[in-house]
Length: 392
Ligand SMILES: *Cc1c(COP(=O)(O)O)cnc(C)c1O
Image 1: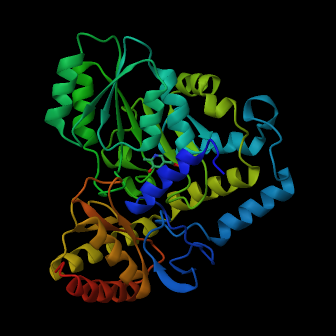
Image 2: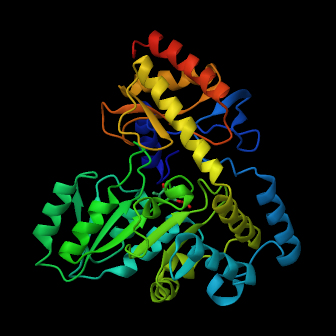
Image 3: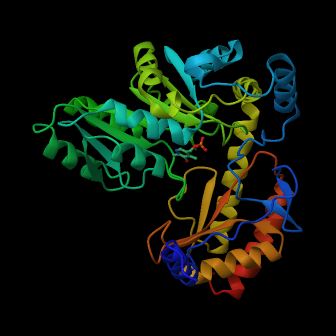
């Protein structure tokens, strides 16, 4: 029997043959530095849980107390009847943490970009976007009637060329960039971006999902470059270093008020549970106070990178606790990741179409809950598998 959806079966079959489908793995423990996945005990090097807060007792207690105080669901979108006192506290905490006039939680980081970007520009305006920006940024720009110009990744000559070519033709220009890029672990040169923005009269938008909790003593990429007050729009997430869930916007008061009155993702989707708001507030407090967590994360990162490099691995453009090990061929990368997994190391093979053909890699993401012994064990496995597969 055929059905009208058979074309999807054919498409999926093609994806399976090209190795482009996810093999969903079951996480059988909380997301800790050491976890059980599909029955294997492994060291987690592929979670975004940089500061090891996802299973932190203080976040869990804050969430439980909020359930008792506020219930579980919000019963509504935030705009109509779901906006609770704890949500207001979170918005203020975001502003304080980011050093902006105002803050706003979104349901997700994806929703912040996909909902806000389409509201910022109109026909006759232009987004100027880094070629490696996150998919939520790409979707947000696509939902706008403004044009989009792409510049070469983190390439300031290319950005300047783009600005030069559009600045007379368009009314408003908005440069959009990730703060930290998740595939390579490199950092956007925000100081230079900001300088060019000023020179050409463009606005700036930074999505700092992988920068918060990691750069700028934990406050993010904007703080790292001392650009507080200079960036027009900052978005981010609580789902990575903060160990929780939800998106955020930090900006001027009028921008935040405009944002929640226009972002369809914010307006037409329920507010997340108050337990999430409480955990997010706690996470911001911890990042603010426990700067040693961030410092330790960086120590681990420096050690891991220098040991990998001295073994002969290429860590690509890594500048952060995202540490790729460049492999090249997609199938070799997949085999590499499978071997690592068998030996107790859970790291992700990143292959085409996530990165260009021939640029396949294993991506490692460090976590402040790991010890130097954990890394030594991971490095031992890397050396063995790297030799077996002729990478080093
Ligand atoms: C992870 C990520 C997001 C999505 O954040 P969520 O809160 O998980 O939806 C958005 N932008 C970038 C750059 C990201 O890395």
